[in-house]
Image (cartoon, rainbow, N blue to C red; front, side, top):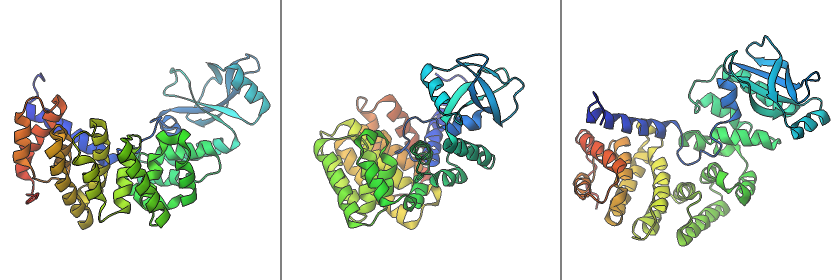
Length: 362
């Protein structure tokens, strides 16, 4: 029970958080780790370069300040034997550390050679022009330029940063990475958990080989019940098959009763990202895509009413009044929806009268 807060206010807060999260970043391709070196550099009040303190072996001493001020260069931070030997072999390398305040503990941010240190300096210098949100366009544009950098560590950080961009931005910058680089990356199964961003970029390709490759990956996932990167493959498949994609997704997933909840959630993520593109400023094409998705959602609820919470979230975000009676009926069946889904459906039903009517579903 929430004391002093109305039930409607709680529901409004929940849905507002969901809408804000959907608008700020693409829900599909946020790879791990979610905290980047840039995040740590930006949130640190002081950032220094350090090497081993020759008067105190295995401990560090600041050799230069990259951000903020340092009164005492002595750093009470222990370095292991491997890092110590590496620093001895490479006299120009440093360890970059940061801390929040003058009394806070130093924390290691990155081991940096000359190339990586140049990258870190550029981040610090440019970060003053970025807005607080991680999906700030200037920040995304900055890291996009590093997606093709020859240093793999720099490419990795750029990939992590760009992977948090809104889907509309990912589409816009998809041509920044050569097809060959994307296909080589997707062919590396050791990085399979990181594939989503480049899958979405590949979905913008109109090369026949890429379209055939995307279709093969989607069909394989559908045939064998694969869940890894499924949301990204669904989005890429629909983008590369604009006339038939949504219908095929519906046929392969929504009309089949024994699909797992995890599969359905991943498919719904893919559709939600496509339908949410542009937010409240969606183009005519995106609005029409939403209509097609909503019609598929009706088929989903025929076979999987337990997914009504996901559908209600999108209908709320898109401000569409549809399937109200269906939602009411599903809500009345106590065992169908979990607590979170009930909250989302209830909120949608309370808001639906304010939304434009969708029209006939069938």
